[in-house]
Amino acid sequence: MNSTSADEEVLELTVERSPRGEVWWRPIERHRNAVIVAAIIGGSLGAMAANVLPRTYEASERLLVVPVDDPTAPSGSNAFEAANSTLPLVVAVLRSRRVAQETVDQLHLDVAWRISSVAARKRLSERLSVSTDRKANQLTVAFEDGVPARARAVVEAVAERARVLSRELWTERNREHRRQLESDLTAVGAELAAAEEAFRHFRERTHVVDLPAQIKATVEQAAALERLRIDKTLELRFARAFGQAQSIEVQKAMRERAAAGSELDRLRRGRGDAGPLLPFDDLPQLEVEHGRLKRVVDEQAARRELLALKVSQLVAAEARPDGLAEVVDPPMVPTGASGPSLLNLIAAGSLAGGLLAALLALLFSHRRSVIAAAA
Image 1: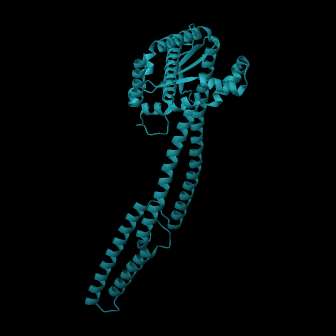
Image 2: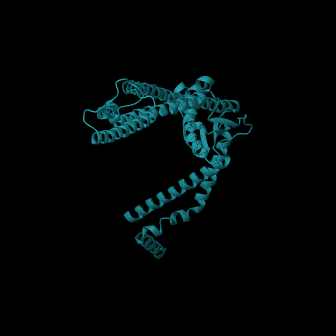
């Protein structure tokens, strides 16, 4: 007997001196029957809890997210991208405190649950689940409650409030965009009026009616006068060569040349009768100034036309009855209980019992080792 006790002490000391990582599981292995029994007891308690706990019922509703395109966006925009950008908006609205509070107030959930309004809103937010399917542009809203009819009413109320609020947000977005465009349209209209007024003053000051036609007529007239002046100069030379300086032919040629030169000078500096012909020397400057003023008028007119088109598109978009989320599968009153789950509670009870038994085995083994080492 003494030799057997000595051998057991040597074995225990050898186990204690061996690496810890190799022997920590041995107490669990020695008490595996107790661990299994504890797991079975935990599973049984889980099954009992599944039968004792109050049953809950889950109602769900499926919504299809309809992509609402921006009417002022380029025509090549992708509808899939528009739907994916709209989906987070609907999810955020479903998760918002505003929708939860309005649902609590509408269904009097605080009275039904016998808690405060804030606590009812928090409970609704915690029990409400929203799952999305980006490929199909769909989302599912589900709610779990102890009363089947109330679960259906909550899902229906939440989805309806979210649909209304999302439409309001999208309409307000278009409305705010329209207000901004109308403000820009007013500013562009004022700039266009100023540009047209400047262009009108320029035309009144320079007597420009049709600048290309007037330039062509002025250049042709200047060329004709220059040719006439050259012809009269040649005639004067011939008259002087064959006659005296005081002869009628010479005097006539001189006066005709002077008249042609005077008329050409008047055309170059500007005629006093304000006719359709323009000052020949001012033609380059007039052409540049006319082009600049007309370009400003054309640009402002094009901007005004584009803004007016976008405003009309947004007005039509506001008037059109569109929606961001349409109901695909309306909620039904659940007939079968969704919780508590029998399998989940059995699995959780078994796991908890087994872990607790294993932990106790390790603690007892460690305590025994400490006592043995102290002895």
